[in-house]
Length: 493
Image 1: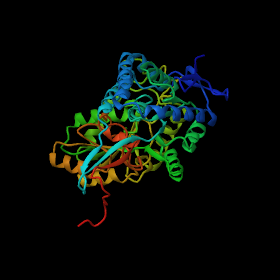
Image 2: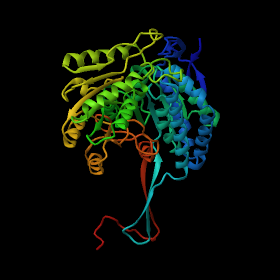
Image 3: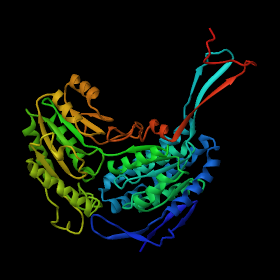
Image 4: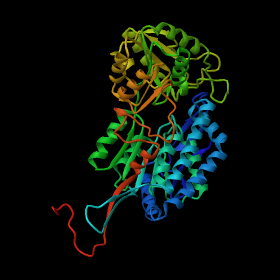
């Protein structure tokens, strides 16, 4: 059985705990490998290595740091198919989506390598004569990264690449469900020539490894993507320790379909956003807010589309919907479907664990569609993280925006309309960090900020130049070449 171990200070090593847990293919139940289960002592070893490595890495010119990222990008590109197939076996998403995710990591590597020749600060005029004023970015120090299983290489790239190009070192805890792709990403960094100690991989549970990372005084910031429950605990503890935290958490994303919309396009956008990745995206569409004039026709189009969706192993290129990650997720999704029925929602299709054909050994849930859902129902407010969609009827754009904004999350939203006036009103009024017009709720591009409002996060962003704000501090510098003491912020007039 293949053993997945930690990577600390440039060395592959198992935890001294001696404990391993199985890594399973969610489509087949096959055990793929076993992964080491680390302790707080392993975290400390990784942090000490990161601290030592970062002292010299911060002095390497940023364009030289970027050279390593360019090499990593090229290696990712060369290994794209191999990585995609590992990702599909381990996580379950269909192979086309897995290739797209690896491409995100490639794109992010090239993009952040480019920041090695930017990392812009500001120069500004001083209020005094013969004085120069500027601000520059400096690294925070050691970044603790905690990443999820649903985008195991893309999100790791979003976080680790800006951290490294900015001059930080990294301690990374990947999800226990996807350690194989994490190990392959580390091998890319290793082969690209990243000095030892700068990226350290520590496998294990959130309750042990994640908690030790939050508590460790040598980790200067925590970047976390995952559930709101865990994110809130991290935020509370990091705040008490005066430690920076960047949180990207849940979503309850809606597609608004107005009465003038292209319904064929809207249905395609909903089907992709709702059932792609089996609904296991933080940007997945789980609500459809439909104008009452087109609601019935839209439902018919969605049912026709759902009937064409094929479930199965993501390695089969004809499959549209893969498994959910594990049995616990399967049970959670099904419990929400039962709750929706109890609340009085009308089930149009799905609503069951799929066991037909060759699906019985995996964790498959039939694509599910509810209608006549009321905005106050729990299935319309709580994140299900599975292939379950709720349709709600509204009479106007203003009502649609109100229904969209009433949930506690604010990640992604979408509107389908032919009216430029309604599109711009929605762009202004939808309270989400991402807004799409005539597209679904998924499909963010790496050169723009990724994140949301309200319960989705704490104001920071992954991806794009905005991600550099997470991994850098601002330093203001004043150079007085007057040859005499000048006093700013004193009434010199």
